[in-house]
Length: 255
Length: 130
Image (cartoon, rainbow over all chains, first blue to last red; front, side, top):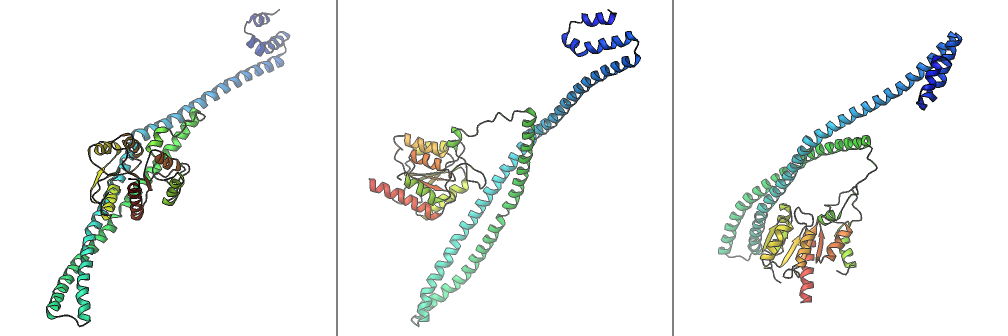
């Protein structure tokens, strides 16, 4: 028994023995027999096997590193989104709310201002019409005729001023609708951010492999609080489409 | 019930409260008070002699459905006519509101005619029941 054979036999690790025992025995055999060719062939085989295992480990390490780097990139983007851009989006949406609120109140102010002016014009015209009809029928005395002329003077003047004011108000109503452009731009920006957030989260879930654990949406609290208006394309379950549907549903319930 | 009935309009959007108030004024109801959610409205209802409650559903603080339930649970307010005026359009929600004792349900966007019809109907039903 050669020295190498003794060493291999004494090796107590059965896995190593199984993996390398035969090759080393062959190696030792070749050395003892002075078969250089076979010795180097066996040695090359051994080295190759060792390298293959090493490369496998290295590949795994590289993949892990790549995953960690990718996760880090997504993590830092998410941190950025969560710390800066989401609060920023909230502020922007808050501004949209303010813009729409202001525009609605401004429009209502202008309409409320215009209503009485239009009403006064209509009332004065009606008053004059009574006298005018008498005049056309040649059934008017001098006093009433003079009254009609005075009323017409006053009417023409006030109608001119009032309708000028109404026209100005209408132009301002149109201008007030400019909020749609501004709020639309802001909402588009926020939609882009939400899209980005979605991509980052989906990617994070994919890397963390927690996609299987889904949180059940909706709870009792949410039902009591309401869902907001029906949005086309967003499904919240069976909903009525108009007041007729509501009435039909309620009358079915005996109301 | 007459035109001097006291209305409480509850909605978190001041524009919507203003629209409803204007419509009520046009219908001849001049006595209209506003609140911006259920939590503000409930003590007002308990303190003031309101005759009619018009409420939105989806509001921060106390939502309209909870306000409706609180009104029905309060012996002094239990019989108050309540009209829900809301964008909530799920069938199960309308059924839930009906079960909680709502007297009328109008979905947004709504028309002046619908609002008038529902108020008239509620008042008519109550007059017949009295």
